[in-house]
Image 1 (cartoon, helix red, strand yellow):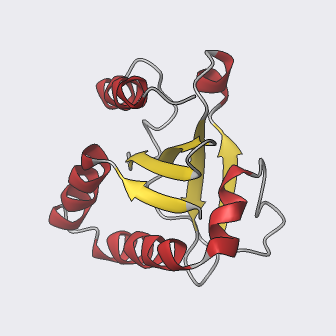
Image 2 (image 1 turned 60 degrees about the vertical axis):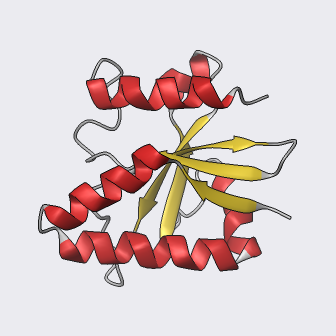
Length: 134
């Protein structure tokens, strides 16, 4: 059975989003994560490159290209509001095929989600490496 696990770094990121006053974004992200934990069909979309880009879902998925090129299978998820607008944060996660487990590694602001030199990105890479995903 496929499952979703929140890394402690992701939990800290979510708390920081809540504490910053971005309550709307926090609420949309938490609601999505709660739904994902219960909905196997939704979880199955999380490893489909370009899923949702046609506007038919409440999220979009893509590979984080610079990390995939390094052999790190990290994905980016954009959660969309009911109006179809993306929240200001990106959910970055990895999938462990043998255990069928998605690991939410971090929830950085979109401005730094793709900055490979940013300390938050480096923290995410370290979390990925510690998981020793196959």
